[in-house]
Amino acid sequence: MKRKKDGVPSARRELLTGIRDQLPLLLGVIPFGLIFGALAISVGLSPLAAQGFSLFVFAGSAQFIAVSLIGESASALVVILTIILVNLRHALYSASLAPSLAHLPRPWKLALGWLLTDEAFAMASRRYRGGKLGNAHWYTLGTGLTLWAAWQLSTAAGIALGAGLPPSLSLDFALPLTFMALVAPTLVDRPTLAAALSAGVLALALINLPFKLGLVAASIAGVGLGLWVESRIRPPSEHTIG
Image (cartoon, rainbow, N blue to C red):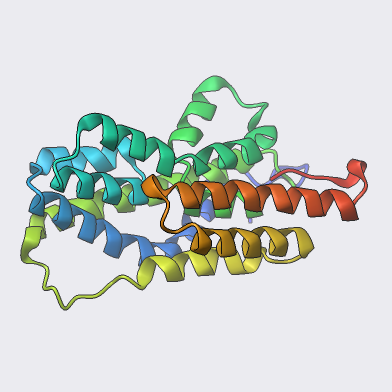
């Protein structure tokens, strides 16, 4: 591995490592890009509008919900508010990574914020728990760009296929398996276990709340409980973020 004299991996090495580490997760991302592209066309969106969702929204769960609402002739206001609610978890992601990115100039923060997704956050969080972080933002850039490119290409392929995907092609399992693969390696102590278990139980209990508010409430409660458990077992001087 190419490193600087002080042992910090080079920017190029970090970028390539971020790309490499994200590649296995594309097995769960690409099928849903295909399905989104086909679904967007099936509800009447033009190919340009469908691709625009992936280019400018770049949030799989929010895109699926938005397209479903459009198919049901929901108003633009309802679609926009629903996207905001579903993506509120990204505020938690940003708060977690903010201390590690505080030293970066604004263009870097804007770029990494734009590329922040569930998968990119999981990989970046793991990287920031490691050492030699001088160029770690290049790793985060690599993870985000890899996901963004794969999402654009798979959406375009789905648009090309249109509604011609056979109904028997069941890929509903791919996204849950992806998230399970992301979460499992992070369950290493009591705070993370408490956060994951409480969020999971609450998400199931509140599944019938409108606009996916149950997911938002479960996420906030899980993070809060995890932080509380951490505060009970570690002195304040040992707390870390991200």
